[in-house]
Image 1 (tube, rainbow, N blue to C red):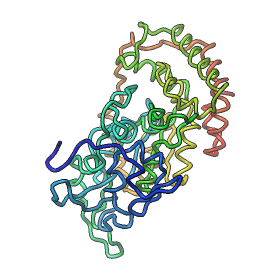
Image 2: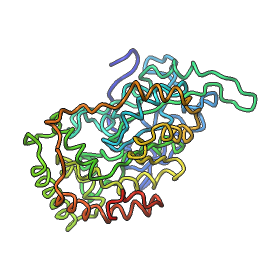
Image 3: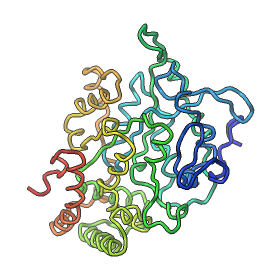
Image 4: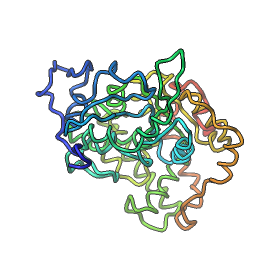
Length: 389
């Protein structure tokens, strides 16, 4: 047992313990895919009340409940999620938003609840499920967000809302990390459910923020970062030639997979996620499509990393407008950005000085059909990143 009255871990869900038909289970007025129940803590949908019981006094989704000792507690889930992509400026975005008077974070950046902890994985990536999942009761009760929400009291005559603050979760791997889904769903060629299915079932009104970057430069940045911090075993020093060889291996592995599987099945294939090039996480269209299946377009704010770093004030204004919160004062933003200039944490020796032309051409050809899909999905040719001009 962790904090007083709160179990940190619990068992995985079991459809046999719920009212279910052939495809869905039903709990607290929610229709839940059976496959979701199997890969989430057993208390997720039994402890979570019906959406209509979220407290009308709070703009953020919150409810009153009892912990395991029967004590009254305030439980909340995030109003919005910053879901990715990795190496696309999410740390910068999180750092700015947490300074807003109406935004609070449950904890530090990257809680990894939905992509890892709910599945019995540890926070470090590339680790199989080895333990019980972190209980939903524990996660919704954790952090100091309650005090922050209570400090945003304001009575408006035309609204029932008294506490106007909102909470966020910023885990940039949440968009792509469904690793080891095969453990829970043997026999499937591709995952029957992913993180967006779970989050949308919990609260279909959730707002999602997504940042995309030129897929080739994102791969380069991720490779350098993961090698420098030993997330993957890399042959150092990193060089353009080594990167090219690894990219070639990753592309070939993906093409081999496609001979017997779907694009989506290959993108989510856990084996491909063990490659340091991080190729799979630049195939944006497959992941974005899964989020758009369960959330309407107006609830997903898609940022372009390159536009964000070229005009951060305009970019942050767009995010604030999307979340329905006041914009930061211009003078405040100018001062903040001057005092918090982004500093690359990597030494020059950890960087690839350039990418070989043959590497760029290989990746441009590989990504073209996926970027075609992304452009059609988002309705703007800017998502080609001028790669084909």
